[in-house]
Length: 62
Image (cartoon, rainbow, N blue to C red; front, side, top):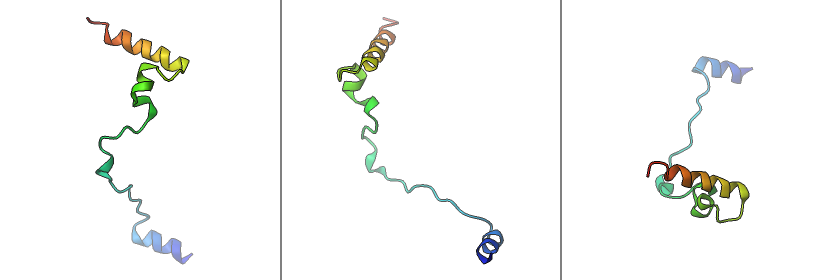
């Protein structure tokens, strides 16, 4: 009970965020942003379809 009273009297719990790490500024974090996945070259049918739609969208106003 003393812990709960201490938390209430102290103003509550403080949740701190994750410390910033700027070393990963230019790295690709997901597979979806890699060239093979964007172009659909890795063999997945859905990736090929998405690549087709991206190409159509890119060429829409040319």
